[in-house]
Amino acid sequence: MTNPTGHQSGEKRVDLLVVGSGIAGLVTALTAAAKGADVMVVSKGTLSSSASYHAQGGIAAACGEDDSPALHAADTINAGRGLCRPSAVETLVEEAPARIDDLRAWGVRFGPEPGLEGGHSRSRVFHSRGAETGREIELALAAEVRADDRIRVVESERVGGLWRAGGRCGGIISEHGPIASPATLLATGGAGALWSRTTNPRGALGEGIAMAYRAGAAVADLEFMQFHPTALSATGMLLSEALRGAGALLLDTRGERFTDELAPRDVVARAIAARGSALLDLRPIDRGRFPALIDRIREAGYDPDTEPVPVAPAAHYTLGGIVTDLDGRSTLPGLYAAGECACTGVHGANRLASNSLLECVVFGRRAALAAIADAPLEFEPQPAEALSPEVDRVDRKLREQMWQGAGLVRDAAGLESLRSASALVSRLVAECALHRRESRGVHFRSDFPIEEPELAAHTVLRQGQEPLLERWS
Image (tube, rainbow, N blue to C red):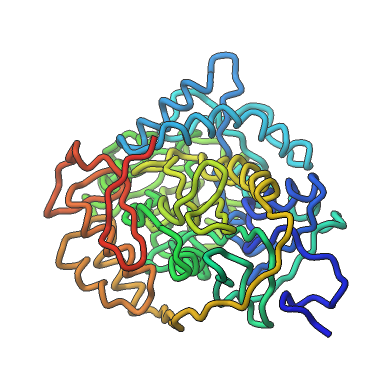
């Protein structure tokens, strides 16, 4: 006989259900298991197919004698264009050094000295094997997860929606049936692959954000898609911020520098877009520091030893997502979120380089602790409430429509065309972007090119309600 969770009768119930196997999900699982919880990690791919695995940049933490969390916070807030949530920033930067220690304890090896990246006033970005930081962290955490008897990993399992019952989340509805848990955490990544030019894996479609919204959770700030300035023009392959931090130069077609390579990403991206094209000159740097990345550039047909390579901006990081507090709690009881699919407000309107992997570790850990602490003593899931079936269709046409209508520079006409898009998250992006009638950080509207002080608030969407601007402390 099988009970409603899909487990055999008498089997111990899963204490925490994690959807997604990037760094945020794996940190959550390891933290909860260390507290004695039984955890299940459900991934639509493998442990090495997440966006985290492909992250080239490093992880920021103020560990140097000339640095401090206060300086890290100031740089984060400066990049965020007046929209960073102060309490989230304080939490992020204060906990960062301890989380670096955690990663080392889990087997991650960082280089001897932190590096400098765009928007940082100090060298505080830790790298592993040059531009392979995400991969190295993901592999180390995956090995720990697989060795932990309290964690069960289910790979290649698609999740169709959340199990909502009695006004709370009681688990998920997967392709092989329902799975129940008193605490469900979404760590499903962002939505960058909805754009035709992207650095993201093709599966980064915002599915967790859509699931949460359909189940009744609030989402916010989806107008803020960060476009990375330097993706290889021909393929969209990311060319890490670390290259510019090491001294690579951005040149125009005449071979002249035209911007500060270490300015915040939105500034650099628009400077490139204004010229139509740009070249990244890697000859001034020690290319031996980035062997895997340099090899991939050569495989793409370029010789970085002798000539600059063509680059252009591409959709990179979703700054908004599922609204959470600083402990990962969404507005739907029983549902938590961490990593790129979550929105704590920590990034504001423009993410500071290398705060993303840090976000995964800091808030993933906090969400795990909260989920275990919040779990009801008695949990018996009720039959799932019926949710309106909706199938998102993402194809080349939609991706191009997103690039044209909600790209680096957008306006009302392009955004209005997305209100009938075939994917829910595309429509939510348009809704947020239309409501924000200004330009701020990565959101630049040609019809409202000025930043408006009274709009320094978060765009929040809830089912059946008009968008609201909320100020978060």
